[in-house]
Image (tube, one colour):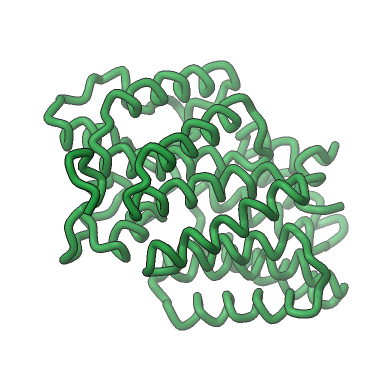
Length: 311
């Protein structure tokens, strides 16, 4: 069973993850692991713990999943877990050495493997880590092509967001924002299997709207996202993100209406590390007033998003 197929699995744990029931997912995976330990169970448990804010527990479970996949010779799945670990060591623990080590491990595991969605996920991580917008755009485009070739909706939509930000960074603003329109339309229709895909897209779209001072576009998509959350009964999806609407509207000289703020019951994902959008803004030398439990990211280069300037 590959990554995309797992989201359609009748397993109670994976079904709970898809529906946003993190507590039920954790209980299901813990029960399954007690009965029969498996790397897939450890992988699923890690994802549930991640959403519940237990980053240390998620890392521990992913490391067990990685070891299990390696023993079974499942290199593609092991590499995917290695990428999760690389991201968490970088964002949650600020351990760049460990993050780089896991990224290198993922790259090595895929070296002799036939082309797959796994290679696309690797390209996507490399695109997000690239400091040069042109390099980021090239790698993200390769990831996008892989997502479409291997019919991986999560990869395709995630890559659209990274492509969009890279295009904005090279002054292709309308093209970049259209990428976000496409990705957000598909994501809010329920196309991706992993709810983090929509969360990451929403975060990146917020950054894109701030950089381009496009408060109107942000408000329009915010309304669609809130409708999606109500229809699918998981209004807690973005509780760990806080709300970034004040940053976008503030940058455009507007005040943030209360209805634009994602809120609702649920267990917030406690996270002290920078969000992915903030990290990309910092690498590009831009300010991003993110409210993801982190302070501002600032650099020396000017923002590129102002519509009056393309330099």
